[in-house]
Amino acid sequence: MNDADARLFRTRLSEGLKQKPDYAGEYVAVGWGCCAMCFSLTLISKRTGKILKVFGGETGEN
Image (cartoon, rainbow, N blue to C red):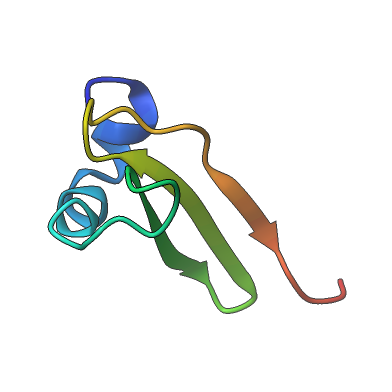
C-alpha cells in the first residue's frame, strides 16, 4: 500500500487487510465515514496490497 490514498487512510486499510477476503477470494472491502453524511469504500487485494479505488462522498442532500 504505497499510493497517496493508501498513505492517507493507512490505519483503516491495514485493519481491513487483517480480514478474510470478501470478493473473488482475494479482495477485502473496507469502508469508513468521512463526516456526518459521507462514506468511503475501497477494495484491497490481499495478495498484492494494492487498492482498486476509493469510492464515496456525500450521501445526503445539500
